[in-house]
Length: 421
Image 1 (spheres, rainbow, N blue to C red):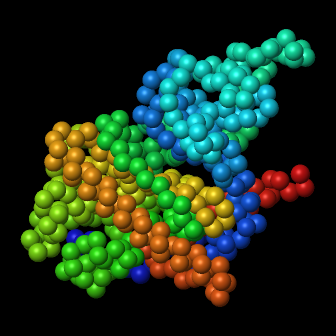
Image 2: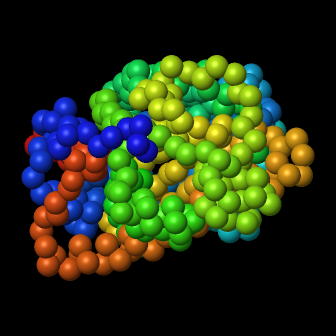
Image 3: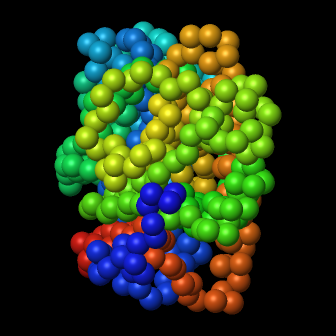
């Protein structure tokens, strides 16, 4: 970290004067009425990432996604022409959920030629057309062409599948992402097919958990036991400063320098790290991924640690200097609960050792996530006490200011547009 000395006080926040420097309110994280507005103003208007194309690799491949925040379930499918489409997961006959297995509220996936309703056997092809109605002659002037599946706006960027629940999206997906995100084009996402996934129900507002990954001020304290004692003690005493923050439109970025774990003294490493050749942060055998896109490592850190791209509203991509990436999703389920999903991506391992190195990295980040989730549930419980109305933030917590300010702006805009409607 010595290569990147602490910038002068206020050096990041001053670049975004509209965010201010005063205490912030977390009322937006405890108020059920605000949450109801947020669902409509944000989650029904923004582009939301719901998965990757590798989840539907061939025609007829599909998966479902439960979207409680917008009160629906959707089907993502690859059609016979190779196009990725999205539909509301509802039969046009009597409203039964169309695609599910044993448990109607659980997500599922598979391959099929058509979707058949379990209730009365209405059938729909992969393009959403109604193709068969049981005892069709008993219906009254039924025009099947009018009763296809209800589509959801869907687009794909770099293999990431996004949906939008607005009647008509206000921006194209590419315009919504903006240059800071599209400058990541060319990263070898399609080679990162060794995948580890986990999810957890968290008793905290989704924004509070996102806040935890928008600053590293907490890292030397909360995650001290994840690092060698000598290293974590030194880090706690010196503090942690990221060398680069950036805000563009509704999205945010924090970039950090890193360390080469294998260059640390023996006593600074854990035995399991030497055995697995993995740790702080990821496998030591860095894959050759070719030239990286211009959007990565904007601070030109050497050594580079990570870039954390926070895509509004609830999607995070973290790129690690050791040649892998992970994603986080925060899916609200109420004003004070959400479903957290973490997915870790590596290139396919070539040897058992590489596989073990990847698994150690995946398990380590699951532990980090559990530590943060536990703390955030404690935060939620006390913010709801309303003992305090506002909370102070330091300069390196500038991205937290932005998330709450941006969310409030979307809600205010929605209120103005719907006033008197």
